[in-house]
Length: 235
Image 1 (tube, rainbow, N blue to C red):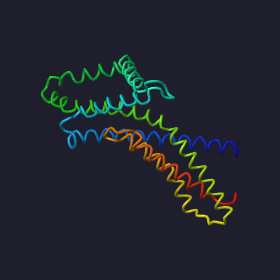
Image 2 (cartoon, one colour):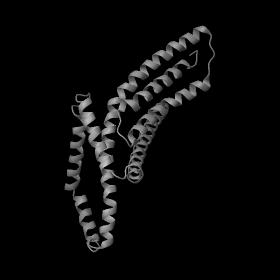
Image 3 (cartoon, rainbow, N blue to C red):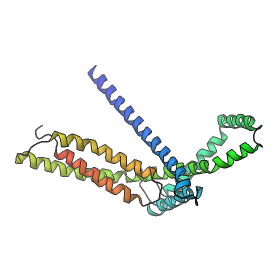
Image 4 (cartoon, rainbow, N blue to C red):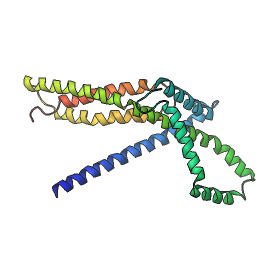
């Protein structure tokens, strides 16, 4: 029963980690949309929906120009646009979506021509278009995060090697251990990776991804090195 219990524990942790990741992605998407909606009134009222549209164009051009031949495929932003268009086409041809549209058309047929309906549609239209642009921008930024994963792995490996060297020096030099520093440094590894993804995905402006991701990758490498260096002296 012990191997079965261990397998169940691994599966449970894997499912839990997947659930936490999906929740993080959903929360960051909702925060991105909320920030864009607030900004349409508070920060860029003269642009409105055009702000999110410009962000999509800028980051698509950046992705295709700077990562035109990536380890995923060539022109990833164009691939995302084609995937979104294909998804829309599939949804429009779906029988379920067709029935829902017909049902909603029947329900709203009596109020379609009323002044209240026209006013509501005019008021909510820009928010729907802005949300659609943010979802497309979110997909592009997720692609950038996937392409940036080797950076975190490489710097994390450097930090691990340096930390193990520092651990051996401490071990043979008779240095003191600090479980307090070890446990907090271990927790900070996940914190830095989570913050990097959350901040980059929810940013309401377009900047070079390296400005956001590189500092967090360096900080993550430092925390991994500190964790390895403070690992218990004797195994």
